[in-house]
Each structure stands twice: as C-alpha cells, then as structure tokens.
Length: 322
Image (cartoon, rainbow, N blue to C red):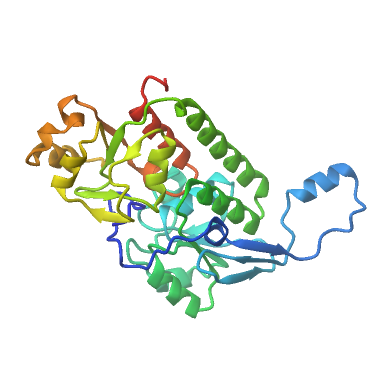
C-alpha cells in the first residue's frame, strides 16, 4: 500500500518498486552548449541560474528525455509532483492535475485528469509538453502516455535526499533552478537541524501506522524519516509497505505510536489501535504516547516532506522541539 494520495493509499506490488540510487531516482542531465563565457560577472551569475537548452535528462525509470525549451504546459499525475511545480514557481504552467492534488489551494481549480486511474484521453487532450509522474504509482499510465509520444518524467524516490534531488532536477527541466534551489536548501536545513537536535538523545522504539493496518519498513522514505527524527522503526526489519501482524507489534512493544490525521472522525487508525486484542499492554498505549500528525506532508515526496520530518521529530522528542 502506497501513502502518496489524499486518504487513498495504494496497494503495494501493483507496480514494481525497486530501490534505486539517488542519481537514478532523481535522474541525470546534460546540457546543450554553454554561453560564450565573455559576459559580465552579473550576467554570468544570472546565466548560472538559467537552464541551457537543449537539455537531456534521464529519469528514475532510466528513460532519456530531451527538451528543446522550457515546458509551458505541464500535467501532474500525483499530488507530490503538483506541489513541487507550485513550490518552484511553475504552477502557472500546470494545465492538469490528479483528483487528489489539494495543495496549494490554487491547484484545486486545475482541470482533473483522473484519480487512482489516470484518464489517458484527458491528459492527451491537454497536449502537454511535460507530464510529471510517480513511477511507483502511475506505472500503467506512464507506459500508455509514452506510447502517445508524450514526454513523461517519472521518479520514485526512496530517501529524503532523493526527494531533494528530484525537486532540483524538475527545476532544471522547467528553467526554475533558483526557486528549486531555495526549496532544496530549506529541506536540507531542516534535515540538518533535526539530526543535530536528536544526535545525543535516546532513540525510542516507534510504530508508524500510515493507513489502517498498514506500516512501512526498510527501503522506503518513511522508514528513513523515522530514523532521522531520532526513533527506531519497529517495522524496520521488513521491506516496503506491508499489512501488519498485530501480534508482532505487541511483541515489539513500541514506546511511541504515530499515525496520520485522515480528516475523518473518529480516525479509523486510532480505532484499530485502541480495539486490537493485547494492544493495551503496549507501552505506547499504556502511557498514552499516541500521536496524530498531519497526513499529506508526511506521505508526499515533495517540498513539504520537511514539515513531515519535523512533525515526526516533535512526536518522538517533544522536549527537543518547541
């Protein structure tokens, strides 16, 4: 089950999600010819922030894409990609988004191109010169759109740094390198601040349930976030996204339980935690260390992942974060 949808996680295994290196996930790029090198220093500085076209990049699926100019009509197939485009100042070029793209508010007014299933005809009708997608969640749509000769840039970042690298490369593709650099710098700063704050603190055992009955283990960004935030993921001995065995969580006896706000009352995750046989013996339950955190920043591999990291750190080490 994948969490990068608004209240609609997707079952893991529907697409093949292989852990890739940061370079492969974020992609590689090569520029066309550089400038003449005889411009004034101020012009050189400005030029350093501008993308030189033609630009060739390789996305997280190993697909090579060449752009002759900055894309002007962009469609996003996942909320995280929508958030990236807006964060780097390219929201005005987004002409279509998925149904779950609810941030920023301006994205709500964009034409919709499907939900968990992408409407291929709707995307094609918008005639985009760039489609930005999640290779882990939009695999079938990516294949179909590429058969229509549409440029699809797809990634599936597995770490916080791979998310940053993806943002930087999308900034390069759309000629928004300065804004993308600012977003990346902020995300790196948050990571450094959190890591520094928790480096000498005890590392409690943490259980994260991102969807009713589902947790996440090694090889995924949420497992890494828990580690950066100063906790030990009790589900970290298993790979990927998986449905839990309630008894195993009791045996692990986490000191802290974290779950996202699903924007429904009562929260079905909390209901499950409180009703499972034997869970009243878990330390986190006995000592009321159950923490609800905002959902979208935690599970979307975009700029607000920094906010998600901070929320985890506050839940795990409230004494270190005001």
